[in-house]
Length: 127
Image (cartoon, rainbow, N blue to C red; front, side, top):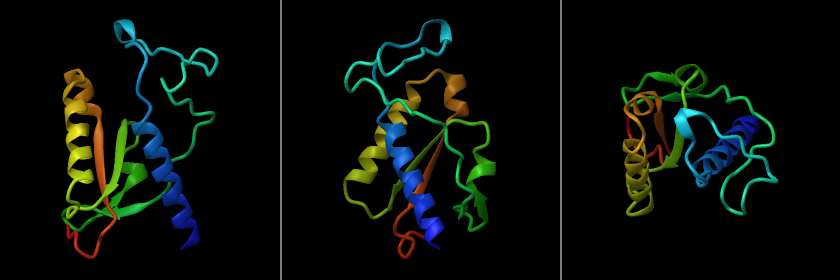
């Protein structure tokens, strides 16, 4: 149980870092721009020092079936958001911002990107 909590905490931290890793100039011709800590301006990017493995977590999808995070997101860029459906302001606003950002991507990238909403209130949020 402790391992699951630590893994989920690490996943939350990674998701927060991923969602805040914005800034800089867009890459030209679809190429990835490399940024080192020496080149990055303060607040313009988040540099992950080392890659991490996705946790082996099985969640429940909206149909009540098991949903394996590692398998379902394999090879796909994925944004993970933790919240709850009865959230009055922050959760809907954040999900709206994610939708707007996704729509701003090229169509091919929109189709690849997965957004995963994980409830923090499973007592009230039913599948």
